[in-house]
Amino acid sequence: MFTLNALPPQLSPGLVEKLIRAEPATIGHFRDWGFMDPAIKAMQQDVRIAGPAVTVHQPGVDGTIIGYALGQLRPGDVLVVDRCGDTRHAGFGGVVAYAAKVARLAGVIIDGMVADIGEIRRYGVPVWCRGVSSITTKRIGLGGSFCIPVACGGVAVRPGDVVIADECGVVVMDPADAEAAADRAIAMQDAEVKTRARLDAGEKLPDISGANKVLEEALAKQRG
Image (cartoon, rainbow, N blue to C red; front, side):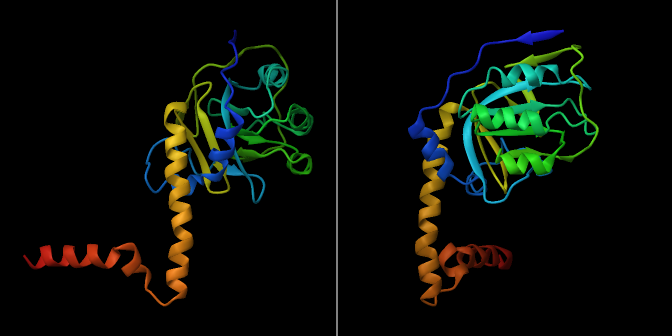
């Protein structure tokens, strides 16, 4: 059985530009939710993407729904694929990656395997996945879903959710929360420039960060 729904709204170029500046590892300093399993890794170096999630539920060995999705996706979309626990069959490979390149996707997040990793890297398509396999899915028309809520890397992902991903990982956020989170992360990253300057001037990190103060307070409580 197939389920085909409409695409979610796209993000404004200005918001995407801001989101790309926000590092997932910085967001991880103040949020504990929305982060995918670290086993889902970037297949390229020095990459960061941001965009709206366009979701696919792709069970078993049938790759038909991926082919459909590549005919619907828009520039800047992030394809998020729920492989339903299959870590044997690659659901994404060379020709599909080339189609993603031509469609100008922001990137692809797959809770599963990919094939043709050399081609994927050569085409410059940012991909996050669990690994590589030479056994692929087939177009056999059994079923799949497009633009429904899915699970990817242990995170619930809805069509239109904001995805930010880089080499440190993938974070998914409600669009209503994303800009505020990005602003906070960017401010923290900008503050690190001043911290590095203070370290260069001879200050110690635990004094700058407040770790020494927290430790002193904890020790005082221990002493009673």
